[in-house]
Image (tube, rainbow, N blue to C red; front, side, top):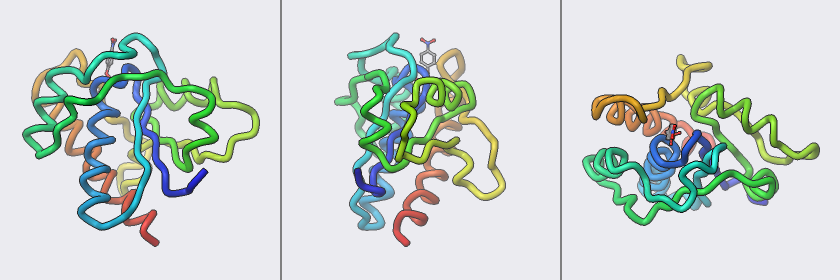
Length: 154
Ligand code: 4NP
C-alpha cells in the first residue's frame, strides 16, 4: 500500500466520485505528482455502468474525458490498497466506516475536510439536481484535488 494512492467514494460511483477522480488525475498530472487514483460507490446499484451523462458532460466541459469510467462498489480490499479514502458526504463516510475491516491502514475521511474553511462540508449529490449542481460538484472536487496534491507533494 502506497500513501500516494487515493480512492474517492460516493453512493453510486456515477456522479461525484468519478468527477473527483478526474479532477485529481488532472491536478496530479499538472503538478507532476505520481498518484494511484480510483473511485467507487458504497452502493452497487450502478455497478458496471458508465458515469451519468450529465457528469460526463460536465467533465468534458472541464477538459476531462471520463467516458471509459465504469462504476464499481467499494470492497474490503480497498481499505488495504489505498492510503487515503475520501467520502464525498457524511452518509458515505458512515457507509465506509460500517464496512471497514478492523485493522485499517488507509486514512478514511470526508473529502472537503481537505479544504481550509470547508471542513465538515458535503459535496452535494447532484443526481436529482440540475446541470448547475454538477458544475458545483466539479468546483468542489477540483478545489479539494488541489489541496490533496499539495498535501501529498510534501
Ligand atoms: P453519486 O450520485 O453518489 O454521486 O454517484 C448518485 C447516483 C445514483 C443515486 C444516487 C446518487 N441513486 O439513487 O441511484
